Amino acid sequence: MTTKREKTVKWGEEPKIGWVEAMYLPAVMSGVATAVRHAFSGKPMTRQYPDVEPEIPPNYRGVHRLNRDEAGRVKCVACYMCQTACPANCIEIIAAPAPKDDPHWKDRDKYPATFTIDELRCIYCGMCEEACPVDAIELTSIYDLTGLSREEMVFDKEKLLSVFDKTVQSGKDPVRTNRGVLGPASEEAQSAKQGPPPPGRGRHG
Amino acid sequence: MDLYQTLTEMWPSLWPTLAAIGVILAFVPVLGLYMTFIERKLAAYVQDRIGPNRVGPFGLFQAIADGIKIFLKEQIIPDHVYTFIYFVAPTISLMTAMFALVVMPFGPVPVDYQEGFRFVVAPGIDIGILFMFAISSLSAYGIILGGWASNNKYSLYGAIRSCAQFISYEIPLGLSIIGVIAISGSLNLEKIVAAQGGSIWDWNVFWQPLAFIVFFTSALAETNRLPFDLPECEQELVGGFHTEYGGIKFVLFFLAEYTHIVTVSFLTALLFLGGWHFPGLTGPVDGSLGGMLLRTFVLVAKVGGVVAFIMLLRWALPRFRFDQLMGLAWKGLIPLGLINLVLVAIVLTLELPKHLLAGTALLLFVAAVFSSYQLQRSMNQTVNARALNNGVRGVSA
Image (tube, each protein chain N blue to C red):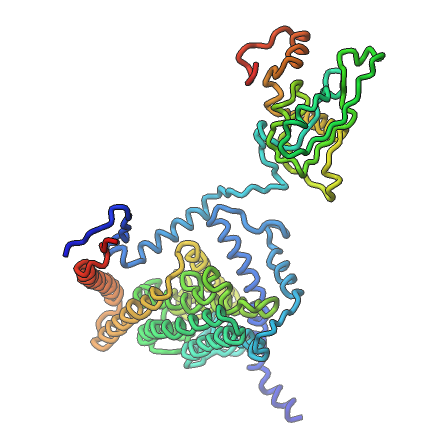
C-alpha cells in the first residue's frame, strides 16, 4: 500500500542531523560562543529611559496645543470644527463674540471663551487638527503625559496655550505646522499676509 | 576544669577548624547573593542588555538590596501545606549543600597537614569525595520533601522529576569519578589535587577528557541548572518544587542551589583542572603566605571560570524534554562512563603510558556516537518503513 498524502496538509520533516552534530558538543560550544560573542559585543540595546530621553519623530501625535497668532492671541476662531470631528467627544468649546469696539480684535468674529480637552478621553487620532481651518489645534510630540487626578488631565485653554509656549521654546514644533493652507479661512489670512501659498506643498495646498 | 584543660589541649587543632567554618558560613550567603547579581549581569550582557545598574556603582549593591528585601518579606504559610515538613525541607536543602563543603579545600592544603590555618574544615578525610557525593545527593530530600509538603500538583511533579533526575545522574557522576580515583590512587581530595601537581599535562582533564565531559554534564544535572532544570521549569510547573515557598524559605532553596553550583565548580576545578596548580606554580604546597594566597587565587579563578561557563551554558542551551533528559543519562552518559572505566582499568592493569588515555578516550567517544547514530538511523528507517506500510501517515480522510 503506497502512501497517500493529503494535498492540503503540509507535512513537516524533522531536520536531519549528521553524526557529528549528534555528538552535541560542537553545537553546545558554538552556542556558548554565540553567547560569549554577544556578552563582549559591548553594544547593549537597552534604552535608559528616564536618564536618556528618546528622539520622538516630529509627526508623533501626543499632547495637544493651542497655537497663538502673531499678536499672542489664541489662534482659534471657535468654529467648532474640531469638536464636531472628534470621535471621542473630548473637546468642549464655549464661543464668545470678539469684542467689537476693540481695534485689536477687528479681524475676528468669535473666539473661544473656554476650550477644554479631556486628555484621558482623547484617542490621539489627529482628526481635530485635520479639521481645524486655521491651524489652531495641533498634536505635539510630548508623550510623557502624567497626572495625579482625572481633573488634572482635563486641559483648559491656558494649559493648552502653555503647551504651545513650551514646545515653541524647546523648538519641537510638529511637522504638520508647516503643511500649508487648509481651508478658505486660513487661505484668506495667509494670502493677506504673504501672497498665495507655494503650490504642491501640504496635503490641501 | 577538665573541660578547660581539654580545650587548651585541643586548641591548636581546634581554631583552624573553627576559622574555616567561620569562613564558609560567612561566605556562602554573600556568595549566593552576589552570584545572583553576577548571573543577572551576565545574562544581560549575553542578551545585549545592561542589567541591574540602579543600586550603587554598576548596580553592585543590588544583591544587598535584594537580600534586605527578601529578609523583610512577610512569612506566608499556605493553609494546605504539611507545616512541619514545609519548614524542614528548605533547611535540609541548604544544610546538605553546606555540609558538602566540609571536605572541600577552598585553598591550598599541604598533604602533610601541619598546624595552623588550613583552607578546609576537615582536612585529610580519606573518603573525602565519597562523603561529598553522599551528602550532596541527600539534598534531593530537601526538594522532594518541599514538593511533597507543598501539597500541590505542580510542586509534586517538580519533586518527582527531581528525584528521577538525581537517581539517574548519580550513576554517570560516580562512574566518571572512578577513573580519576583509580589514577590518583586516593579518595582524598587533597591527594587527588597533589597528584596533578606536575606540569599542566598532569591535569586530569587531559588524561580523562571523556570522564570530564561525563562528569561535568551530570554534575550540571545535579545542580538543576538550566539545560536540566526540569524540577523548576516555569513554563510547565509554575515554580516547580518551590511554588509555595516565599521570603526567607525560598532564599534557603535558592542559596542551596547556588551552593551546589559552587560545589560543582570546585569539584570540577579540583578533580579535573589541577586544583591550585598552574604552570609555574607546581609541586607540593609550601607554607609561605604569598604562595598560599597565590594558590588560593588560582583555585578561585578556576572556579570562577567554571561558574561563568555554567552561567553561559544557561543562555546557550534550551531545556531538555524529560524523556530526552533520561535518555541522555541512560543511553548516553552511563555507557560512556562505563567505556571510560574499562579503558582506565585496561591502561592501569597493563601499565601502559597514562597519556594514551586521552586520545583513546576521545576516539572511543567519537566511535560510540557514530555507531549509536548509525544504529538509531537504521532503527528509525525500519520504524518509518513499518509506519508507511501500515499507512499511518497518509490515511486519507
